[in-house]
Structure formats: C-alpha cells, structure tokens
View 1 (cartoon, rainbow, N blue to C red):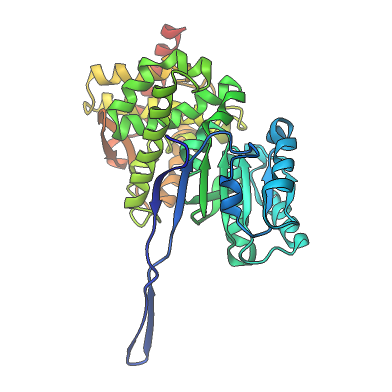
View 2: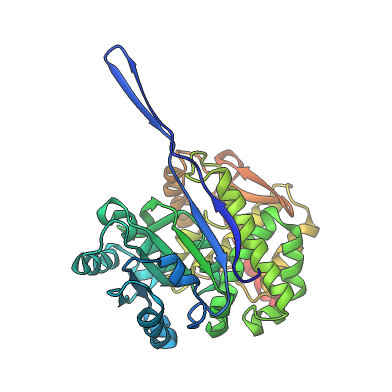
Length: 396
C-alpha cells in the first residue's frame, strides 16, 4: 500500500422515518458507519502529519500497551507535544493480555477519560495489538454512549483484522468475547513498519488470519504467502517489500470486502468465521498459552480435515493447506484438546450463531462451504484430531 492511500471506506447515510399504524408508532433508521483506512509509513515521525490530521483540533486519550510504550513511548510523547493542534491530550499505559481482556481494562480506560473530562467529540486512540484495540474499542463505544475511536495496530493480526473491523469485545464469565459492540473506528491507520519489532511468534500468529482470508477467498494471496514463507517470517513482513505489501493489502481488502457485505452480522453465516469455531475452546482451555492466531491455525486444520473426511475437499487441496500452515511454523494440533469437551463447547458457538453451527470449511481454495450439526459428530472430530496429531509428528 502506498503512503497516504485510502484502502477502503465503509459508509451509509442516516435515514430515519417515523410511521404510524393505529396505536403503533414505528421508528426506522439505517445505522451510520463511516470508516477511513489509511496506509502510511513511520506514523510517529515528526514530519508525518497523518495522525495529527486525524485527531485534528481535539484533545485525545492515547492508550498503549507496556511493550508499545517501551518501544515507542518517548517518540509518541514528543509527537503529542509537538504535532497536535490542541493541548491537553494524555497517554495511558494499559497492562493487557488475552487473560486480562475484560471489563477491568475497560474500567481503567473510561476512568481516565472521565478524569480528563473528554467530551463526545474527543477520540480515544488505541496503539497496540488486538487485545488493546478490543478493550479501547469497547471503552470508546460505551463512554458517553460513544466517542470517536482511532485504531493504530502494531501487530500483524491487528493490522489485517482487529485494526480494521467493526467488532470490539472483551471476555466475561469465562467466555471469550462474550461482551462487545459493533462500532466502527473513525479511522484505522496502518503502518507495517511496526511489525519489524515483533517477536516472530506474533508474526506467525498474525499470518494465520492472512491464511484465513487466502483459503476462503483469495487463492493468489495463498500462493504469495507460500512462495515467500521464510522471507516473510524472518523479515517480519518487511521483505521482499513488494510481495509483503501486496500480501498485507490483499488481506485488508478481502476482510473489508467480506465485512461490507454483512457489517453488523445480520446473517450468522459468515465466511470470516473460518478458524473461529473450535479456536475459542482451544484458547480458553490452554489458559491462553495458545495464542489466538495459533488457535485459529489449529481450527483451520481441523475444519480442513473434517472437509476431507466428508469428501468435500480433495487430497491435493487438503495437503496444500496443511503444508502451508506448517510451512509458516503454525500449529496443526494441540495436545490439550479433549474431543468430548471441544464438541460440547460447540453449544456456545451455536448460541452465538442463532442456534446453528455454520462451521466454515474449504471445498477448494477460494470456495468455502458451511457444515451443520448433521454433518459432524464427536467421533468425526476425534478422528480428525488424531490424524492431525499424526501429521504433526510427520512434519517434526
């Protein structure tokens, strides 16, 4: 993506109408959503005006993770002091992990926003990974019934998923992402240079979300990821420059295209749920030692294996998918999976999808299908897990 380039904007005009039918009044309105996604380089460099232009003449609360603060905190403080039009913006360092992605984090953010006296036009800016973006997204949606939210993702999964989506959620009652909102950020500012400081494990985890889009909707992206697997990992998607930029852009555009078709999930059949049916169980059961991206990879492997067992996807495509994930050092299985418990966990997934399973599985690259309860059972899941564990040993 070229500097300053708008990738895509999602927008709908407000249209409200009141009708009367006897003793019934009905107010209908469309829901406004306008979001700008902009690619840039060296966002915090003093001569890069993008962040200052987006914040404009408003005071802002900047929320960063401890890691981001250690790497970029001094640079961000200088930017806040020198580049922003309006004085009075503040920086909050929020201690976040997947295990701490809950209402306590939201409380910390909204408490600081209250202490600052932020008004309804004051943005809360999240600079960090997906957990930080989620907590701040929920906070911005709740504070004063909604204030602007600006997302600056610093991880790969944030850059191509959490940083551009409309969903924000926190964990509650032992359930992953049980509480959340549909609230588009005012802007998503994408700077892939942040990835250069990431541990390689987080690069691989983020690549799982790229493979999700590649497998369900973009075979060309799939082949780019396979062709440059080692280079992308070692360079943190900094090289080869053209291929890395194309892979990131295609991932962002594909997820935005899918979101634009079903922005508020009125349809519960979502191809974007590929890799997100079994993964919540894996993450929580591991105590979040298995990261989100790693769990998504395992989920995609299981879903592919199920599709193969049912005769939907052929051996060639099955092999391509599993080889690609393993080639990016992504896991295909986890020893802590209990097939009985994982099958039982699908009850919560059905509740979230209005009573249907809607398991997304590949039939070919770029061609997903939806499988329902009548298609799978506990024994099928168990055999697929065993097959993947055996295949994992073969890769080792």
